[in-house]
Length: 153
Image 1 (tube, rainbow, N blue to C red):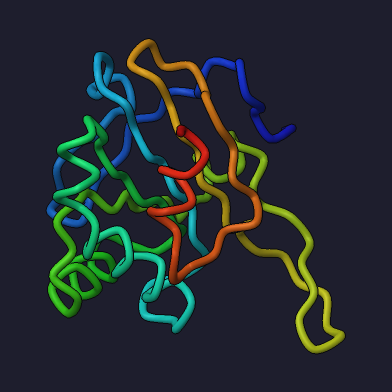
Image 2 (cartoon, rainbow, N blue to C red):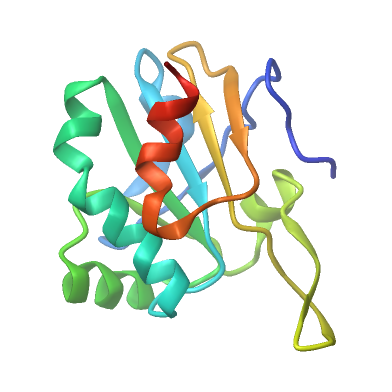
């Protein structure tokens, strides 16, 4: 599946978050959404990204944004991640990679000369009607929330 682009309708999904709640992207219609995909809970870069959204969460809320994280980790893994780092937003469990693949983000990657399949770290900014406003494919994990805000100015 191709990665959705600016102007495309964001693919809807329904899955469980870290608290076992059923969450659908369509639940957020009428709000701006920061939907960010990350490879794995409790890894240094993913932790930096989640904590950056956490540290700027109130500012993002005041600007009308909801934040949703998605990774192939389980609800249990997400719950530990949320608790350890006091994350105030839903983390969607996608262990079968259905959502990740729907967004075209399961792809070949390379690290230390070794090829493997993994999640492409990507952030989508979605408008209140469910349309993609911006796609950030070069995420700066320690500056992820500011990247979103800078794009919208």
